[in-house]
Amino acid sequence: MAARKAFEGGWSKWTPYDRQRLLIRVHDLVEKHFNELALIETLDMGAPLARTRGYKSFVSQLILFYASQTAAGGVQTLQNSLPGRFMTFKIKAPVGVVGGIIPWNGPLISQWWILGPTLATGCTAVLKPAEDASLTALRVAELLIEAGMPPGVVNVVTGYGSEAGSALSEHPHVDRIAFTGSTETGRKIAHAAATNFKRVSLELGGKSPDIVFADADLDKAVPGVAMGVFYNTGQICVAGRLPTPARPCLTVHAVRKSGGCAVGLWGSASGRTSGVRLLRRTHRLHRCAQRHDYRP
Image (cartoon, rainbow, N blue to C red; front, side, top):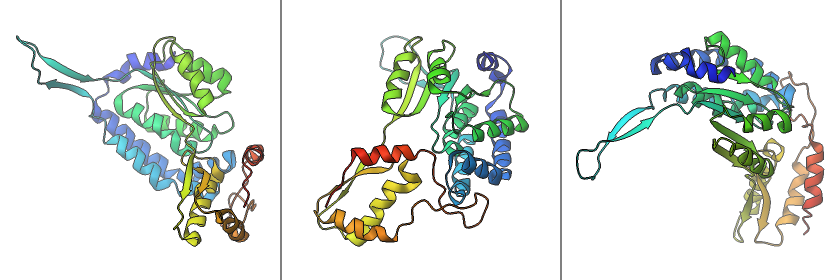
């Protein structure tokens, strides 16, 4: 596979300085093309253009952080209390080929959780974006090549999770697998990774309750809870999905406040006033409404 060949080939001879220079060039190209990337993200997965453009500073900080970590590896001598003449070493070395499976709800950011550490440490990566939000990752791969990344260091494989994702999780030449998504899929990936005892990183679930205490100011608490539930239409790892009221009147107060909420405003993706562009997964909202029947 291309990633294994690159890891064992010329890429392994790049120094921390070389990789840092590459990441800085990548940063500058991504920043130069960020409006294009934001528009691709909006058209591909539906987030408002104002939001995707707002990710620019965060993505910039991510890439620059990893550029500062290229010398984090190496060999360290540690003290020990063993009798005789023994030396203890700690070796931080590239793990090898990393498989990254990222979700559809924010690939403009989440791909850098795979690409950044890969380029900084001297690993190689096979990135599998969601089948219905792959365009940003593909465009970034083009920018990586333009920045001077050697062939095979970062590879983007599109397709369904049951096919491409499963093959990546099981592949014997992948040394580490990182996944963000559902708990059910995470279990399958952990099982598949056992084929060659891959290192596994799983970010699963992530929905947490919002707790509103009895002495809370509801005029402040309700808008906060609403933002926690509906930010990115509630499809985000840190969404406060299940409000847990300590006051019986919370639901009534929330209903009254909801009169000021605008839901499903359509607008041109390239227009200045584009507000909210409905995501294509309205069936998820329907299922959520069926599961949770909140009453006064």
